[in-house]
Length: 429
Image (tube, rainbow, N blue to C red; front, side, top):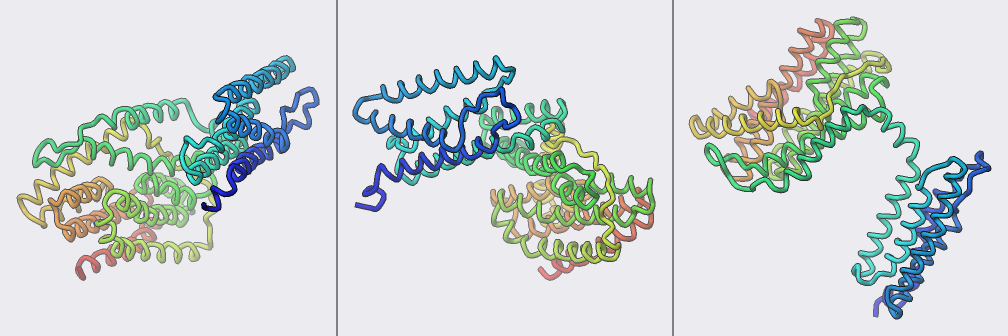
């Protein structure tokens, strides 16, 4: 007999009390002290007691059937209804405390529910729900502030994309179609969802933190969404305000450095074999970019506190996702055609051309072709490195043409070092 079985059900009861105390502690700190006319449902003592009621009801149900749970649920519902009616009469409508109390009862019962699975699984389930609910309860102010920063267009665009990702994606056929049999609808849908999801992380960070905290912040976060978008916005600011050329260049270089890390993260999730092959070359280019960016940061006197706004679109916008999907399909077909017709040199040319606008499409195309065995690993690796080199040159050109000589010189110097590093890696391999 193991230690868990020996001390059951005491350990599970302790789990129920711990979860109730966690939620009760948060409720205790959320007590409306200034509102003396508002009833307080309970805190650090009440919620553990509610969890114990659920646990005791579950223990009794093992011999008396489901009735103890039914009675406990009905009794708590009556008390919560009375509490809600009292708060409503006092002009304080809201069911957060009532909902958390009912959830605590269920968590107490769940901690003793043998039918859920072994003890280890129950601990994970109960603790996870308890922690998540406590975080949601304690983050009231932050969540409200975040929601006020979102426009209705953001919400609608996000819902449209989620409708496609959650409802439409699972029903896409997972079979090869089209020229050369390289078009797999499900795989294409997954990659589109992945790219938009990674971009959404950066977009949410911008919404929560605000882009006015400095061009370095917007460069770091914006690089997750689109380093090209950061380049265009920063170049416009440098053209408008020449003294900000150094800070604008820093923003572009930070975004470009983040781009290498983002690309590696995506490839690690899609095709680990290609990720391992690219870890050294892209890591070298990222390291060179980081060193150059750091040197420029100290040279500019750490003048990174200037505020700016990078106008990024919601990456969950459905049209943006579909555009990327169309680009991905075109690059995939062209890559396979070039590979079949011209061999490795055709893939390399495709990588250079595709990298002028975007590195994700060609990189994910190569990942898919490597996974299917249609392209050799070293060809895909070289193609992706060439695409990143091409993208680096394109952003340096945008900084020079749109941002002016001062910004272009700074971005171009570091970009040249990154380009040389990439070409040397290709030559060495």
